[in-house]
Amino acid sequence: MARIDYYDVADAEDELKLALANRSKLNIFSMLAHAGAAAPMVLDLGQSLSRHSTLDPAQRELVLLRVGHACEAEYELSKHRRAARRAGLSDEKIDAIAAFPEISEIFTDFEQLLIFFTDSVLDETRMPDDLFEAVSKDLDARQLVEVFLLIGFYRMVSRVMTHLDVDIEPLSDFEKYQLALI
Picture 1: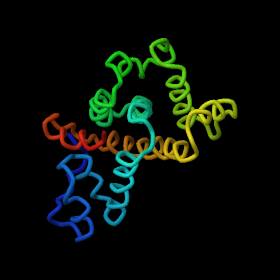
Picture 2 (picture 1 turned 90 degrees about the vertical axis):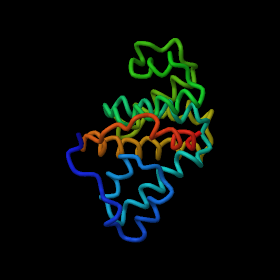
Picture 3 (picture 1 turned 45 degrees about the vertical axis):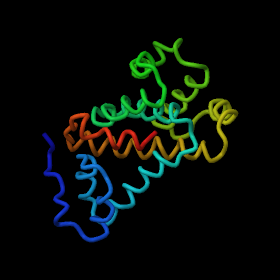
Picture 4 (picture 1 turned 135 degrees about the vertical axis):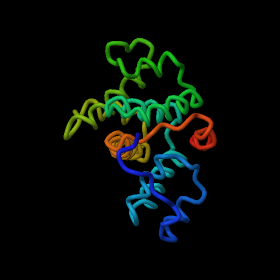
């Protein structure tokens, strides 16, 4: 059960009502609405990073699942496991992301680099040059910046959802939103 009540959209300013109008009725959106004037910008950034990214969708979901595990964010993991399947990640890889690097043989060399990259962004002030250079061989400048933004954004959202104990919706309420991410 959430630690605070979900935002009542009936009480929202017009800009926030507009930002929420075309979105699924997910608890994450109802909780983020408490941010007032910042909420539309946060929601737009998340949508932009999900829908307009030039990253391969499977790579994006690999990063998001790793962030979710690092943050122990069951809400985010519940949503992105399904998106990862739709993006082409096998159940075996989805399950192994949490155990990496102990389980690494099922990931491609680049997927392993991407997981190490994600961990480095989460854990270090500045990643080692050799790791950055290795990932830079396969991602262009836009994609590199998108990965940094994805990691930072989903870490922020995961922390909010976890600390506020946002309730996980039944999958049927989430289906339309997941389809839009791919």
